[in-house]
Image (tube, rainbow, N blue to C red; front, side):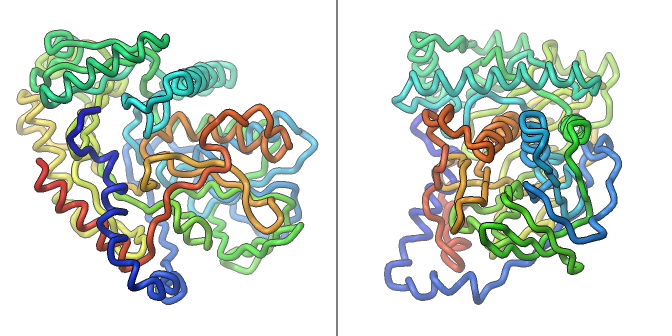
Length: 471
């Protein structure tokens, strides 16, 4: 939004700093993946949202032949399964999930249902007409989610009350005002709010103002997982959980092998594995897992909530270098996420050792925003890996020797909405209806090249230090 660095620029800066030494070390960079095997770790989801995840299905207990195999039981995989079966009911579709549906980022996020993509959200791209089309696509998808929830009779607690990006500095405020004025001339219904209007809506007075998107919102991530699992199975998709895929042999027919030796043969495979994709030997160059942290309070009483001044059920995120985001659940819990992030060497996915320190930072920030909550602990805290790309762009498309390996990743914090947009796109690609998505800039896109270890780790650490200096 402003000229100061933001966490959205995090990996782009890491690329500059970390890749600087690659020129004389290309050999190390090339052989690093074979020398440093990535450890397939699937930490159990202990988030607040996990309490609403659907019952777990049995694991795959036999060899299987199918039309489409989807690896990953999060929003992307389940929505792709739903749209595939709904549009082409004659095609057999199986979802294979290593742990349980919603165990990854789909069940650990900050619950903000945002429009746009991360690289274009509240950011001037220079392509306003394309931005408008992407905005309308993502607004339409929120409407689809609401209609699906209603028609299926599965409540995902979807609230489309809008969302705020609040401004921590006057510089951010002026840059935001300029952005809003530009985009309103192109038909986007965004609003500029001064500090008084922000305070009237969400109570806090620590911000200078904000940018309001009336079409964004929030929901319950665990219940959205449940919704997509229910509708996918009603359409006839088969879902096997506790089924880890360890190898993919490509061919006109792909052969997948599970951890316990079962095989799945399929004409098409969808990699709906988010931050875990590199564990299967794919797209290591495209994204890296960045650990984010979230905490949630116990339900606030009427008096406690009134003391915060949070009158309108609008989630918000700030504009600082290391962004924080907050939301209010239907049972009046406040959750806060973000702040300093972590990267573990070699795309590590085990719970970071410094997590307790990050949870303390979340609590300090919460009480800074809402002093009336001082002394009230966070009831549950959790971490999760976000699949971040260097240029903040998402990617969806097909690849592989035979063009039958499909992928969607790089959501960079906008996955709550964008994943099911990509689920529809993947269904259309597999059904050979590519043409209607030719305009979409992320189709068959590949994010900026991300170096291998040790340059990846060095780059991220350098970026962290860079941001400390910029605060």
